[in-house]
Length: 358
Image (cartoon, rainbow, N blue to C red; front, top):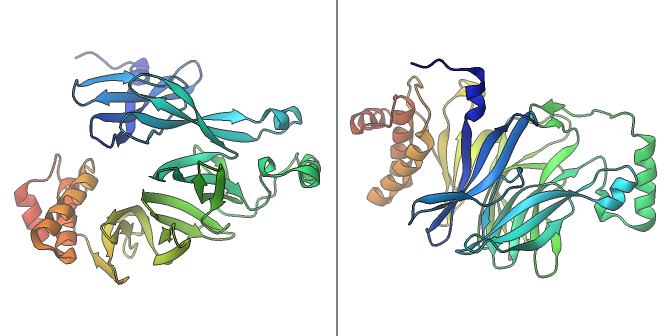
């Protein structure tokens, strides 16, 4: 057997962020590769044709991590661009520029730009998008200011440029850096007018987002001073411009949210026995606002790869078989746990064994 060399680790490539075209013909994914010269990583988007079974790279900017399908042939992807006027005055303010790319012909043009650092974008329906952007409690966005307000803020920042006042915990995070007084905020963008408006209050830090026409499910940490480990689940209705609290923010740490017909599904940690290290639990919020929950069986985690997919598959199968949320939750939990407790995917025997414990 050939021995591994340190340079072998630089040859690994990591696919992520898989997105299927509406007609199921194409699959986009982000491919992460080592950049030895830049001492970092390169991210570019690739396209896989499910009919020809061929893949090819479709972006070359080295910073593209997400594709948003608009129709069967067009995607949106983002780049970052510094504002030249602000840079000339010594400040680095960032625009997020979205490009519209035809994956068949390669034709590309700028679609729109947003005056902030955008972390995620989702198409709600024709001409309406939901996005998460970085905002700050301790300072306004320079790109949103004009005239006297802009000049006043530039003077203030110049006077405080040599230091930073830290007022919140945690102060920083690996791979992120300092984020004192920073929030991830949910916005609605209207392409026809270029207007964008805030959906979440200023002290909400948004985490998971799931979008469908007219509605958005999301989780958020509303806080000041100390960031909590729990978060709430909310549903925003675009037509009424109203936000409904489905799960209050003082109960669970939530890993996933999704739509299930008129119901809301989430995967969360109760944190009663082992804190953030315990197995997640399925929750379903029904049409009446009632929360259905089921726990996890005891066992030793051997390999968590595929456990999430197994949970979703079991939940869907359980609901189709019985029409009962309780049974769907039980089967989904048993399938996910059985995979996590196995070297490979779960077997029928293991699922049945754990199902009996729930």
